[in-house]
Structure formats: structure tokens, C-alpha cells
Image (cartoon, rainbow, N blue to C red; front, side, top):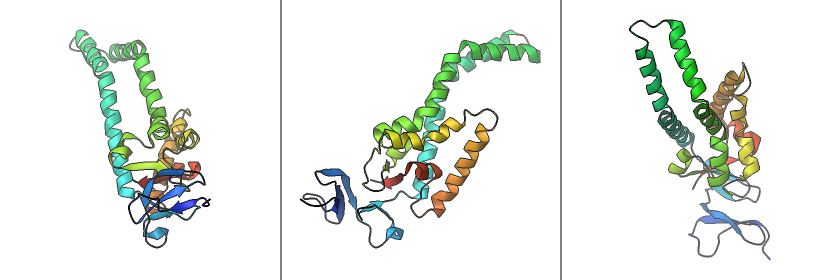
Length: 213
């Protein structure tokens, strides 16, 4: 029986390889890069090649995700914003700061479930999409997938998806959570261009790569 490794599977296009785990083929066929990893591929433990996503495509995917989240937030909160504006107008032409604050505070209390849904969704966004589909909507739209570097398997599994999304939980730390998330994001942006496999901080922690499929 053939040992585990990267081979050209029968019926796959020429110039592609697929991972054989010793019993079955795992994942889709990928184009084998010419030469070393610097030629555009991430070489797994079995010696096969994966097409790495470029820094530009990853930034583009993140922007798409941001736009989608903003649109969803607007859909959730447009009615709330409308109610707040109407309530402030009802106070008269010169409402006091305390009156406006009371209106806003009341709106938050009355719509706590909406805020809870948005907060929970932002925390679980990356985790659920990566664990179930192999990538967030932005990545999927651009043909990118989060994968295991040794086999190219995507989705990479719930454990790796969870590790990759741990930075979302940092935002819950009182006081310094936002600062820590910002620093992780800045470091990840730098690593996208400096790391030989375009990995971010969270890619390193979860041992994942983002590939082009």
C-alpha cells in the first residue's frame, strides 16, 4: 500500500497533487508549485505543495467581512436608531444632555438582546465560518480557505478554528481588551508580508495557513 504523501491522483489534472493518508485521498487537488516554498506554495510535512493566498487577497477578504458585518449591524439597529431619533425629537427643540442620555440608556436597556446578538456574533464569526465552511464569507468569495499546512485539509477542524479565533475573546478583557486586539491586528498585518507563508499571529497559534483553491 502506498505510504502517506502527496501524489497525483488518477483522474486529477496534470501538475496537481492530492494528499493520500494511507487509506484514502484527503482534500481537493492543488497545483504543485515549481521549486521551493518561495515559489508560492506552502510545503507540508509530506512534501506536497499548496498555493498560498497573497497578502492582498487576505486583506481584501477581511474588508469584505467588515462590510458584511456593518450591513448586518445596520439591519439590526436601524429600527433602534429610528426610535432614538423620534424620542429625542419628542423632547422638544432644546433637550438637555441628561434627557438625551436617558433616551439612549433606555434604548440600550430595551434592546439588550440585539446588542447581545451582535456581540456574540462578532465573537463567533470567524470560529463558526472557519470550522464549518473553511473560511469567512470574504475568504469564500475570493476563493480562499483556511487549511492545515501538512495536508491542505479545509475546514481545518473545530479545535484549530477555535484557536485561530481566540483573539476575539481578548476584546472582552476590561480596560485593555481593545488595545490588545489592536496590537495583535497590527502584528498580524506585518506578518502577512514578512512571514514566508503569509501567516498571521493567529495562524501561528492555530498552526494553519490560508490557501487559494
